[in-house]
Length: 346
Image 1 (cartoon, rainbow, N blue to C red):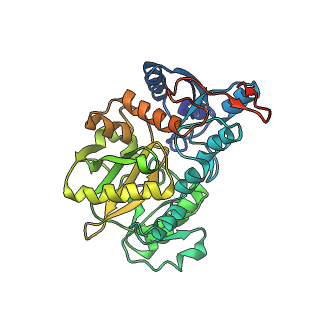
Image 2 (cartoon, rainbow, N blue to C red; image 1 turned 45 degrees about the vertical axis):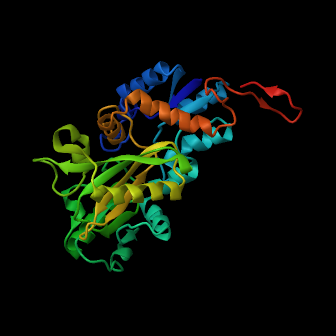
Image 3 (cartoon, helix red, strand yellow; image 1 turned 90 degrees about the horizontal axis):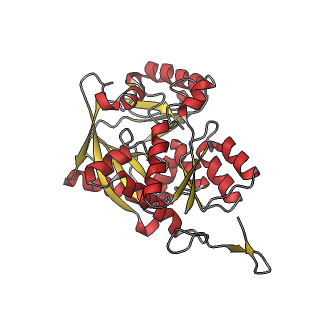
């Protein structure tokens, strides 16, 4: 297949004046190179496209692909991760990973938790702070935890995110509102072990392939999987493969959330145990990082004996299997037909 790759390259935005933290979710060149190489090794023709602006330019020039491998995060708004998929939907171009609805929902952690709660999936009690007036209405037991409602890679999370008093709650929420220009998610602090569960597949074909425990090392920000801890994970975090009864419940909850939200192809679900050892869902990552050595899902796959090439192959196979535009061998495009029955070239 001819596979285009959409992505946001971190260095492009840094050169435009954006900060390190603002660009934390964007990709390194070696991630794109690794995906290209894996696709080529699998027998596909890989074509880097770039961010949504480059995609718009390419589409306007008449370029099309059998499939787009989409890892573009976007920059603005709660629907930023959904922008590229929505555009590809408009052109009827199949793509990897979840659709615009799922990506928009999962990015907003508060909305996600409301849906998860309706599905009966355990998640910590929470409140959404959109303005100072919301602070007085919070009636949750301390300690609490605060973070921006729609960020990833630990952005906005540090040692001050664990709140022990109402004064800390007020101070931290005001700072986050001002700094990130979005609501703040406040939840009951979960004191137990933290896991990230890897998921491969879609619908009934989806499976929880394994779990890593997030073990903070000496010198790390204590008790929180913070922005600093994630940025310096090679030094501050041990990703420990765990296979024990305590993790079985986490994997079951993660898979139920994945299916319940309608996530596709591959991703991660993050959980943390409460004071009684029950895994509570923190967030769902339907567009997780794919750096071969730095991102959680490839790290998990490596520890499970799944090569990076095989991970990319399973993602492509999952996406291709639902596309009416791709033939069963998933290597040649099946022409669409117009109302007269004539093939439409792309």
